[in-house]
Image (cartoon, rainbow, N blue to C red; front, side, top):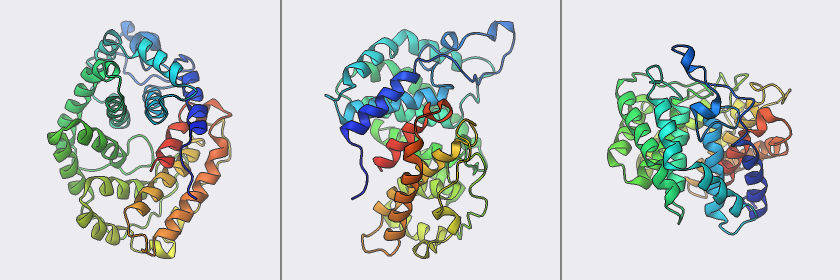
Length: 334
């Protein structure tokens, strides 16, 4: 039986996230300082997302909490999650976050990874019966939608690295928000961009994977992006061309879990995230195929192997603990 999100797993990882989304230090700022006045504390710069070591990790820590609350509204951490949201997801704090984005040198702040996670959080909050948190976050979500609208038409090439700058990951998460919010213009822009960037790709060798600090597979996240955005009748022939040898377990580099040698090193610890995000993609891609498709067994086996390699190491060192659980939920809920 495939692994799944259970109330016990949800409560465990919600407790982890609650322990770091308001932990202000250590913190890695991402802003350009235009002058001495910009040298401010994390909580002053970011009234909500000042924990979890960096802005984007804090955002997807809140996404994890929202997802667990939606799946298990009477779970062991539900009361604590609601209290956290009531304290932090307020109009005045959202206004403070918007102000940081409005700074003169903040045009590229958190582009595209943090943008995508913010929309993913907005989508998850909108699915909860309590509307106050979604309504409070709406101005920041609208700001990020505008940022995507300004950026994607002028971006001539995709970014295919396995880290935060990967553009396929951003399109993939933003697609969930566009669909859920009924943002037809954003959805159309995401699809047009994906086709422009990736539509002609074929015979992906995945020869550069994994890089030493990857937490995304550039090959698999591109495939997952196209699965999410293309209609099935168009996705399947694209997928056949893009990774034509999956049934034979090739490219072999995709099927071997990454070896993580030092989890106290923030960059090397990314490789646990690679194993989790690969499991997410393997499971989502297999689910898009006919159950009798010969690619399904190797994809399912690879997903299980990658989950088994990463799950024991989600907690234990803050370099991984401040973010990895979000990727567990992506994999388990694929």
